[in-house]
Image (cartoon, rainbow, N blue to C red; front, side, top):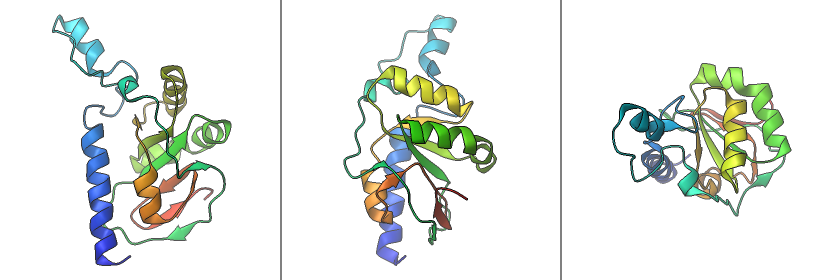
Length: 159
């Protein structure tokens, strides 16, 4: 990966992480809004659960197979991309322990409803799942399908 692509990757990920900073690990559907209601504080204007961001559509991505390959993205936090579809749900069930060990951040790149997001979060069992378009990341790293895990050294679907 050349220097320009590394810089672009950093910008894309920084933008994703900035957009996602309100929803930390384990906040699930309730997030900060539920804690605020329980503590008597006013409800925040934006629900940290991400429902206000729905629907999310990634036009360049669809469920399907990808070939694993090496990349060079030093310092990148592991991220995984899933959608509200049967392939993603099966993949998430099978990979969630490994994703937890990696402290991977989940990007839900195609989801229409709060119910779909809630189902995925239930399957993720404590992993952070953020609804956000994955088009920029996919274009930069050259893949068109999910579910997928992206780390600083590889892109893979089925290890």
